[in-house]
Amino acid sequence: MTNGFLRIASVAPIHKVADVEFNVSRIQELMVSLERKGVEIAVFPELCITGYTCADLFHNQTLLAAAQEGLEAIRRISETMNLHVIVGLPRRKGDALMNSAAFVHEGEVEYIDKTYLPSYNEFYEKRWFKSADPETQRTFRSHGAIIGIEICEDLWAPIPPSSYLALKGAQVIFNLSASDDQIGKYNYLLSLIRQQSGRCVCAYAYSSAGFGESTTDLVFLPKTIICENGSILDTNEPSDYTGDHVVIADVDIEAIARDRMHLTTFSDCAGLNGCINNYDGASVSNLIYDTGQKIEYRSVDPHPFVPASDERLAERCREITVIQECGLASRLAAIGQPKIVVGISGGLDSTLALLVAVSTMKRLGRPMNDIIAVTMPGFGTTDRTYTNALSLMEHLGVDMREIPIGPAVTLHFKDIGQNPEVHDVTYENSQARERTQILMDLANRVGGSVLGTGDLSELALGWATYNGDQMSMYGINAGVPKTLVRFLVHYYAVSSQDEVLRDTLLDIIDTPISPELTPADSEGNIQQKTESFVGPYELNDFFLYYMLRYGFSPTRVFILALNAFDGKYDRGELIKWLKVFYRRFFSQQFKRSCMPDGPKVGSVCLSPRGDWRMPSDASAALWLKEVDKLQ
Image (cartoon, rainbow, N blue to C red):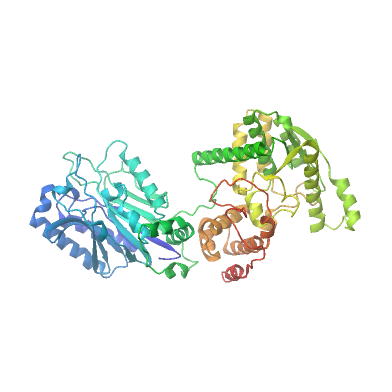
């Protein structure tokens, strides 16, 4: 296991019913190939040494003896291999015949027998085999991971053996199967595997016998599936039924171990069911990393908050908009249906907040002039953002207002002795706090509630002025990362029937991200670009996701980033921005500790009342020291 990843394979070779020599030869050839690819554990189909459809031949001594000889040949070839394999065969146990899985590793063989034997409809397994005692199910250690094994029908039982195996510590479940095909069965199988891997917080590798099984009454299409914690990592296309089928994936053992530690329900369930995990967790907590090792058989998404497919992205946007609208509608109902007051800069975040406010008011049947949208041009406001702010408010039909902040801030500078030519933090924050004061006082005057616009990424980096734009009555975007804000605004844009509004939204999406607190350049363009100070938001969101969602160390986050952004950012850039991220994340906790209420929309959230509780004076020394070692 390298860098916390275990390389596993699901294999469905072509085979011949009862031709043990042919079947074993195919298994051995595939073992050699898998070894070359660095696979550490591979699972083959149920009864793959003999074939699943041997029927009454299972009680014939010739076949049973050949099966044992075939297993011995596999055992011998394993002696010099790093690869561990799980193969299926019929095996005598006392006076009974068992449908068995043989775990073959470094010349050793250990057995697990099938618990649930289907004997209904097309299945007659109890005619030949004896059911295993569930109490005999056990886990194994392999390449630093804990694994469990179940066989075909076991997965379909109300309480599969894998449930108990997972509670006893198994991080990867291997299933040897021979499942015939019927209309709709494959999609149901995928759903079943997703559900079981998600419920058990494990990786699940499934291999089902295919081409070569008897077609007397049934058809078996090859199925190789690898799933991790509810998500399919890889699978073959069953309709491509000829030849050998192999899928390989690097499953994240470190992520699985962390989720089980974090999700206390998992260990509670283990205790209540008398399942004890006696394995030492030190192998996970003291992992040795190799930052030069690529993750070959796993796609690391550079944008973990943003679904890759258009269909899933649209669905994600629909879900978030409904959550945001419901949160805002519920809050308005709870405080007497006040008006909404929101500041509009012409940037992404305030645009999204206004769009949510408008759609919520429409859902509630309230007039658009119950939304008071205020643009407050200052020293750094450009014509582009100012024009977009006005167009946005006009075409959404809200009560639009313009209150320039220049005169008030200039007077404030005089009061506190600030030189207006010095564009320091006082120069910037005075503008942010003036805008917040205007919104708060205006809300008091009209009987309104200030809607906050800051997003999750800004909260993580502390990219907000304390008691300025950090404050509101309800932070509608608090659970939405910056990389997703852009797509949410685009979602609203393509849904709009107003062509001018749609063009305005698309231009806002293309505008560089900036607080616009320092003057524009000589040509009137944005000079203060946020990402030049805090780093690209796609990197910050990536770092944030893996730090908070999985609790990974800086080194592990760095390894993932190297793979995700290969060819886009070099090693030095990643280290530079990773250090900025950790430094800012720790030092800015005090702003999050008193952040306003706001809806959680995803698995990562920074609410101090919910998902993230951290001392404001916690030291970042350990994390920054680890980043320095990456140089």
